[in-house]
Length: 402
Ligand SMILES: Nc1ncnc2c1ncn2[C@@H]1O[C@H](COP(=O)(O)OP(=O)(O)OP(=O)(O)O)[C@@H](O)[C@H]1O
Ligand SMILES: [Mg+2]
Image (cartoon, rainbow, N blue to C red; front, side, top):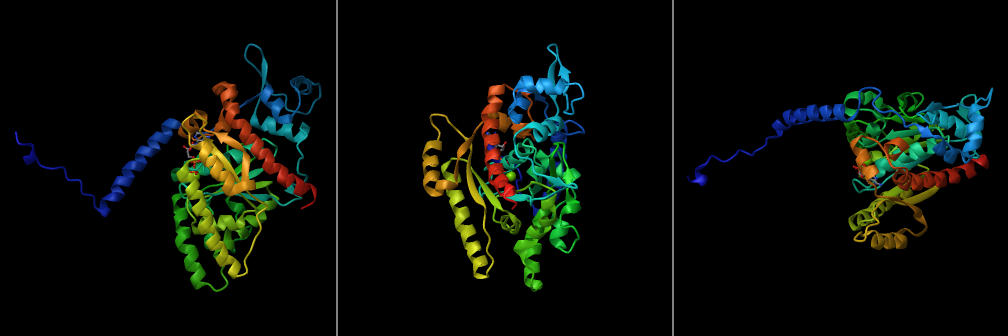
C-alpha cells in the first residue's frame, strides 16, 4: 500500500469555526468544575484545632480551654469532636477569638464603620504564573485570620481570584457584578460599594471579574480621547474610596500585563507586593515591568500626577530549595536589584499549593486533618509572617491616627 496516496487530514481552521469550538470547550470546563467543586456551597472554610487557635491568638491551650468552657463565658466554645472530644473551632469562631483575646491591635469601629482609612494593596508582575493570584488570596485569608476585614478585587479577566473565592466566573458572574459598570459610569453613587459580595470565608468579601473586563481596555483610552478632563488612571481609585471605611484592607489582583486596568490598580494602591518566582526568566520579566512602569510613571509626572507608595515589597514565591534549583543564583540577582524591597520571608514551592490549584483552593483552605501539619506549616507560616509584616506597617499608621 502506498501511504502517500492516503487522503491527508484537513487541519485548516477558519476564524468562523472558533465560536463552535469555544462553546464545546466551555461545556467541558463546566463539567470539570462540577466534578472538582462540590455543589453549593462550593467551598467551605476549614475548621481549626485548639493548637491552631492558640497560635493565632498567642495564648496557651489550657487558657483557651478554660475560657472556652467557662460558665457564662462569651467566647465561642467550639465543638467537641472525635473520641478524644478535642475542640474544633469554625473560622468565624477563630476570628472572634483573635479579635477579642489576642494581643493583635484591633481597629476600632464606630457605628459599623472604621475610624481609620482602609489600605489598598496590589499584587503586580508582568510574568504570567508568578503567584500573583495565590498571593492575593493568601494575603486576604492571612490578614482576616488577624481579625481584619478584607475585600479582594479581581482585576484580571482570567478571573482566577474569583474562582478561588468559590465563584464560577463564567456562570456566576455577569458584566454587572464586576468593576465594569463603574468604569463606564464613574458618577455612580457609592462608587464600587454596590459590587461587593461576601464569600465562603468569614471576613473576606470580593468584587469578582469576568472575561468581559477586557472591555475596559477599549473603553478607557476612548473615554480619555473623547471626554476632556477624564483621567483614565484614577477611575478605580475614586471607585474604591467609599470602601475604605468598610474594610481594613482592599487587595487588588491584576492581569500579567500593564493594561489600563492594571495601571488603574497601580494608581489606586497604597502599597505594592511583587511576587517573584526565583527563575531567570521571571527575574528578567520583573525588571522589564519596572522599565515599562517607570516610562508610564514618567508620563504621569510630566502631567504633574504623582503618588507615593507606603512600601514596595518583592516576595520570593514558589521557591525551589532543591540542589539543582536556580533559586540561589536568582536570589542573589534579586538582592542586588531590589535591595531593601526584597523581603526576607520566602514562600517555598509546595505540592500543597500546586495541588490546591486543582481544587481552586490555597493552603489556608486546608484543615490540619487534610494534610500533614508540618507540610502545611512550611507554606502557611511564612505567609502568616508576611501578613504580620504588612499589618505591622499599617497598625503603626493607624495607631498614629493616620
Ligand atoms: N508556593 C507554591 N508552591 C507550588 N505551587 C504554587 C505556589 N504558589 C502558587 N503556586 C501555583 O503556581 C501557579 C501560578 O500561580 P498563580 O495563578 O497565583 O499565578 P498568577 O501570577 O496569578 O498567574 P497569572 O499571571 O496567570 O494571573 C498556580 O498553579 C498555583 O497553584
Ligand atoms: Mg493571576
